[in-house]
Image (cartoon, rainbow over all chains, first blue to last red):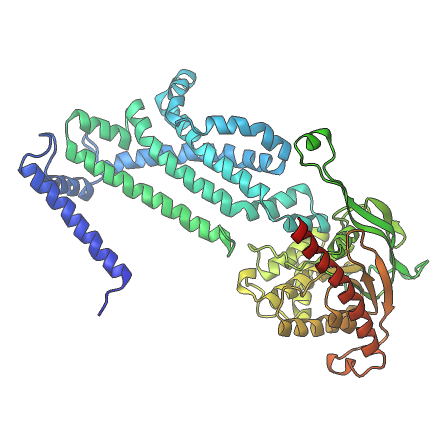
Length: 262
Length: 293
């Protein structure tokens, strides 16, 4: 009996996993890689060690990986909220006005491709505080996709909805709140989804640079201890948390779409 | 009941009056348009349209496709302004959109994030913000019943068939108790059977309120079944009203027996002759431009 495509993919996934792990294990045993490289079995063992007890606390430099993830998540959440609180209203404003949109567009186009980390020294200089600088960098990272998507969503609201609101004599506020925002919601959430992804990407680098706490700091600290297994553990954990964040916003996207195309 | 919008003693029997209405879409005529070879000449969509619509009459505007029927309806709705001429509602000029005119769109234009109830509630709440919540709910309920949507109140538009969506559209337009109902090819996107069924529903609903209605359609049968008067438009550009026909079959009408009324066949033949002739010219000219263009 032929296997279903899902089943085939699962089997292939497992074959690949076993293949990678065996190659890794064999390569280390045969000394094919740098002597720094830990074996797969050792990595899995250490990985399990970190994962099975994520919240131990043995002093400031010896905390479970769960604490670091929570600190990073907190920073990303606050920075993301600040960034979104700027991006969404601004996006609505420029989405509603063609003139404003054209006037502001060059600024957005120039600033958008810049790595948010380039702002880090400015943040340090202005805020003179590493924690707030991290939030500042995350906020800037979260602004652009949300801003651009909000603008797009607002300016592409089906004009017939606005006609309805106008023909009923709805006020500007009521039209924005009850018609334009919900109509643009799928696009706005799509922007938020990209933003949270970028924010989560950037937090690791920001914490490596700013130091102190967080998963980025953890990676840097373990590098200084030459504990490669911990770094690999952190990479997998960062990936899983990022996946989870993306899925959450994916759900939110479906929830605000109501059969509209996204 | 809601406060009646009907004027008790109208000075005139004319409810809606179109006086020498023209709509011109300006072309690109500035010097940089010429420079970039993107200039275009003005487009006269409709020209010099005169039409008087009496109180409580059902008027259909029929014409070949692309003749500017919808442009005309948007002007009456106040969603766009005529280039010249004036539109009078109860003798007062129309300056913009307003809830004294309820609109039914061909694309239904229901808010996809609102349920059936919420879509109608949104309209009622916007037009009558001072009405108590219970009163608003009562009105919404009344119109859901009127259009036969009981049981679907909490469904979202994507869960409804085209016919049901347009029932919501009609309920929303009527729930604000407008003086005039404007319908822009409301059944144009529906299949033939649903269309026939909804035409019967429109007859039933209209018999209850007998509001002034302006219906844009390109279906001759639909116009004959529903209207008191049919205004025939010529082809665009610069479309005008060629003729206004009286449709004096007795009401309430039944689609099955309509054919038997004296004059039906003649009226239908007349409409067909006009529309086919106009359509043929439009089609032939579009073929010609495609060959030479």
